[in-house]
Length: 215
Image (tube, rainbow, N blue to C red; front, side, top):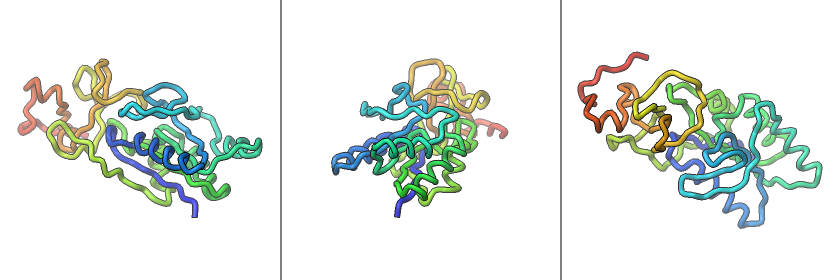
């Protein structure tokens, strides 16, 4: 039976790498897939991993109907044996519903990849809808690590190395980047205490005596 599967995890845990591996494995068996993405680090219309792998993809627009797109593609003689949706947290809930309809009405497997929560530890609307609708939710087994060595469970946005908790939900960036605005994965303890690798290295804040930041 076709399924809607949601592969979730923090940043830096290999989601896009797994998406590319699934694409490689199936295309090597003669299958053809449709790849959707949104705001990939490599630019518009790309699916990329931090390992340097990249492939072309369909860049999803805000108002795009993914089910209608697949139907038109198939009606024009195209082929889609499976669908990959990377950066699925950026999709609108209605677009997640459309992916579920692709599974139910067209009988096509859909593999969605995304992070569950934003830099404020709030659910992305797209991820929330995937948790509600997916046949399976798979947490990726490659564990990203906080600077302290503990398992990273939260995504943090940083400005100049310091964690921020206000701003737009979506600001495209990457982990360990040199630009002023970046992202870092943290354990829950240090996310709550807003202790990044930079502030810990600087010795400005002690991870053992920091007051816990209010929600």
